[in-house]
Image 1: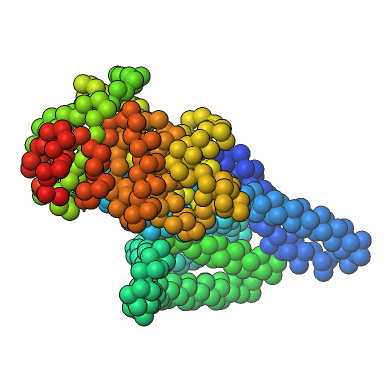
Image 2: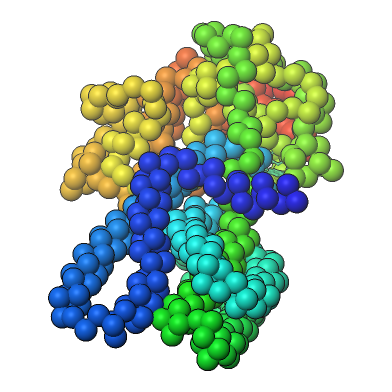
Length: 570
Ligand SMILES: Nc1ncnc2c1ncn2[C@@H]1O[C@H](COP(=O)(O)OP(=O)(O)OP(=O)(O)O)[C@@H](O)[C@H]1O
């Protein structure tokens, strides 16, 4: 029970902390409105029982003036309560979103092998919104209903203990119905959210691969897949609606039954003179209030369960420790020279523990040396780059930089000293200048430095020819640029980094001869003074290497000596 309470009630509540002030004020306003609400039936009873006797216009006027004052107070307190809870919701949802993003972005790369991107972005948007609605307005309504219910029951007992006992027997029925529904709603909501995440993932994949979809005439299939996914979500959602509507029907019936029984017994008490008409009227009003608020509490419980179900994944994610071992280092300030050594390294990807991506792999690369890695697809070339960048760590053996074990060096420091140029460079939306500056996160990079890097990367001329030059917005995934132009921007970005180690991952394979020459000159600038690892299938790309390493299933097949690439069958 404790664990369930902690998980479903306390955990979500921990997010309310940042808005404690607003919520407390909102709560005070809530108490004011509840107090007024609870006094209304008593006031009405007083009015009914005394108006006949009063026979006095002044008395009526005074009552009306007091009522107007109370109603204005009620209106102001209601408005303030809603505003305070709503704004607290916005503050809370912002902080949850920020924490979630922070948790996700800081995970190590293996985490992204396990989780789908569509799923993760769904949690950031849809799931967090559900949580917001329930934790603020939902919680406010739930609390209000609970306090009104308790207050109403107290008034009922004061008015007539016998009648109250009758009600107390019936009301738990609606709680029981709520518990039953809540449990099932929670599970269904979780499934709905999962199905919706599938739909999002599908849409996202198809939109981002839109050229591929059209090239292979897959529009019809893609529409069909999306329809199937949304139909699955619809099915679970409809079954959830059925459950909710059945529950509403039952609770409405219970409410009216309570009213009927009260009137039946209450009428008898009035006839026998044990109760006044005003007393019975206020009892019925309190009864309705208690029934309504009991429904409110159970509704809230249902919503809470639904939200907990839907957002269980948000909490799961927030519980995931940030595994990024950024600051492991004793040697965090070492200046890299560029020497690399793999000593008997074996490595399996966490998602594929059955396959050795690297198998007792040993390689010593001297400072400033240029090594080309060649081999069949899947031989382990990119894995070497992944280990160098600290995306994964060897399962056995050791990776050393300048003779120091990689796990003793701060990960930020390692990455600061490695520049990568990929086959399909990733560019962000934003200006070209900002994309080049991206290489250096910890200081402001001047325009002069950006231009200098672009010049060395043979990118300056084409950038200047664009209408907005360096301020050209690359928009969605750098759509407006050709492959070669994107590469040159990526090279400028890498140049700016002035890293000691350079990884060229198929850097020129997507280019025609003319473009390749331009890029090659840019790469020559980039390679100056760097230890370079060239991952490629193409002989022309690896011409500049001092040594060629041929990999096969994670092992070195033929280690070649300096200048021997001419003899290799590539
Ligand atoms: N993220 C990953 N999760 C699981 N297995 C992976 C992952 N990345 C690569 N692998 C597997 O590890 C092995 C080595 O892959 P790697 O990407 O290093 O090959 P490669 O030589 O770079 O191939 P290519 O030339 O096609 O890029 C392959 O069997 C591959 O399927």
